[in-house]
Length: 465
Image (cartoon, rainbow, N blue to C red; front, side, top):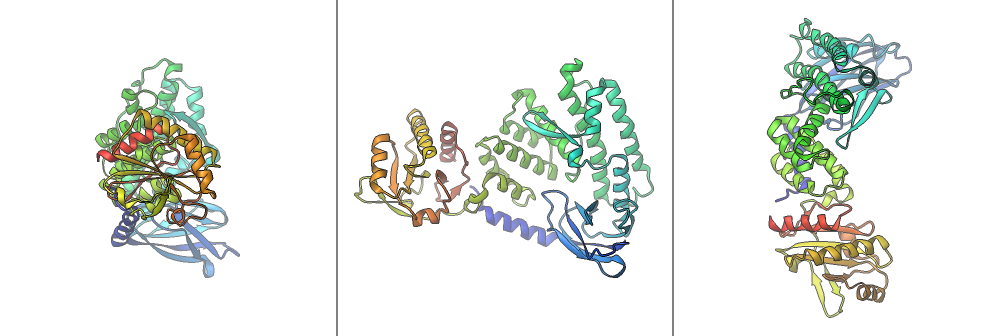
């Protein structure tokens, strides 16, 4: 059964609040001049804190506490310049910086000091990729970013030369493990750094092979790529590796356009913990963007398995948009006049059946095209257990009746009229607008643009649950 979406989000918030631990960031920004405030905000979409405005006091002194349920990346902004920082729950990070050369030359102290000293040392070897320095390549229908330097290496060098250049940088990165600050770093950051370093090598090797195997006439296993251990999804390289490796492995059985179901089940067999939750969320999001409606059922499974996952809200934004408020809630009942004008039909009378509702109007060409296609599909795949309801918002009842007579649509046809209270209850903002009501009367997640064959398959799957 689908969980009430907002209840899931409330539970997620409560869980975070219960286990969040204050992290303190303080220090001084010398030479700040007229700058009165700096900013702190999460680096990634799944960060759990809101953007913070931090006032600067005399001599550029500042301090702030934020509650963090898990380690995450943050960004400090000073006069349009930005510094990435690693935030660990309970850490005290002390910064001593100069506004004139920011973000270079920052000194760190406190319990979070070693983490951020090593982070900046890593970025000296491999600077964060700014958006205009990225080059995207489409692999298995997904856009993957590579630095312009790595993209240049891919285009210029043959496999062994390419690997040697990666190894040179990889070796410098691994030297950070012997830095005296590494033993002082938090265990969470040590895992993050390993994820960045190992992810850097494996992601860039796998990307090269998938992009240039045919050109170089090499086998896909040429580099003897290894599967990475459970890592930290704060790492850009590790996250990209997870997605690319999942698509590649799924393609071995599913071809160049692996299905979401294949990717999802494969991820469950290969990954675990937070990386698994992240990867599954990306599989759902990517599939929905491609119009794969079956992934809505995967989201039901995802919420049941991981009710407190920090990635659910990201999926919601992509799938439901304005209709998110309905997911898992009871659909409002109504009583509307039928086509024959001999009585009224209520939604509640169909409890125990899956109900498909489509708000439409005779003047809406996309509505008519959609209903025409659905009608043809219904005749091929008829199911008496599924109720198809159309609700017209036509201003004229007679125009509505004439359209139904001329089109010959099957199903239950109801008239709501213009400025209908029912349309307002369903928060319909335009037509066509469709909804799926489950057997228990709750809203199911509804695809925005349904292919009729896929829609009926989805309805039948709901009916069989």
